[in-house]
Image 1: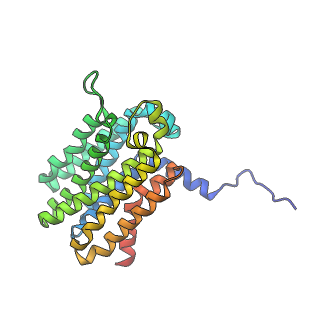
Image 2: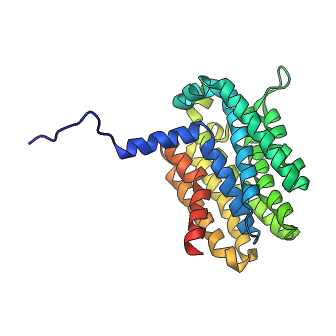
Image 3: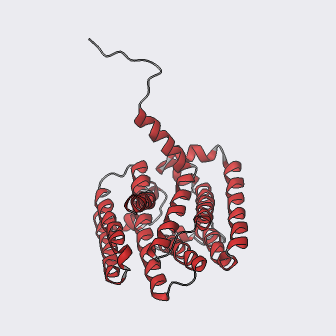
Length: 287
């Protein structure tokens, strides 16, 4: 007997995929990445996470990445057509919500941690130079090979290492430097993986990213070498977080190798940007 089909039936997997697509396109997911990445920053520093600070970084990430998607609409038509369609029909709403989120983040920081305000302004300033052509004939930073990856990685490392340090009292220069480097390398790898996802559109638009210049195999080798440098930090990490740090490094090797082939955008978001949410869940389960 043939299996009957009901017009109202739906795939649970498809439902989850649509929810996740909305979270990614609306920048709510990357906002969550900012929250949990800051949470992990506290843990790596050996400090108790402060939820308000994590929420401030959520607002910053949501704001900056939403504005960046507005600037990238032309490229996303090729690389991420569904995201481009979502953003282009809501440009005014996206801009207003982005500016409102950043203003709220600044306000919360002024009343909670005034010393962190200059650092909180860094992503906004960096995004202005990174995603906008300020002078005619001068390329955006994101269009300069490697520079884009360095700027994004440095900004994330600054936010997730220095802000937790400022809100808990200086844990020591070495600890801050180690967390900064750890976050820098992890974020650098993530940005290059996203360049691998966007390689088709970047080639068509003449954008010279690392994957465009080196090709897939050499880029993967570069990322594996970069991730390997994090192993040198393990002997100097606090015993309480050494195993956790090791898991994050090994996980990095896993997804670098996994994405050597064709990259599914949703799987990339979940495994790479979702790493920090999964790491926080792991911490809660083992604590």
